[in-house]
Length: 122
Figure 1: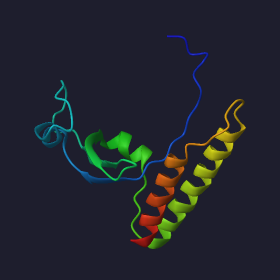
Figure 2: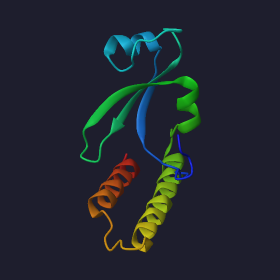
Figure 3: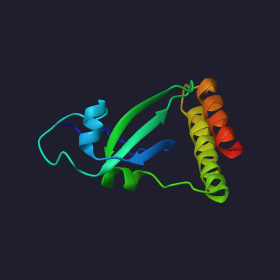
């Protein structure tokens, strides 16, 4: 596979999750059955789409814990919101600076801002 065109990306996404063994996730249709430890530790992950709908999946414990930090109190939610706002501003600035790009996806920006607002109002 040609890797010279690959660029490094970083993303943020707010999810809801709970610990769940792979076998339980397979039974619910959130993970694929495969060879290996069916009782591998992991997380049931619920993703929130921009339109407010959700979908469920399963993630191995180590992968999940490397990607997500728990937000348990208002201070942590505020810090997370600040980080996401900085990333959204940077993403918007980059989109505006890309040669030939005249528009930013306003629906995406508005959706992200609404999610941040909801999180802060909890």
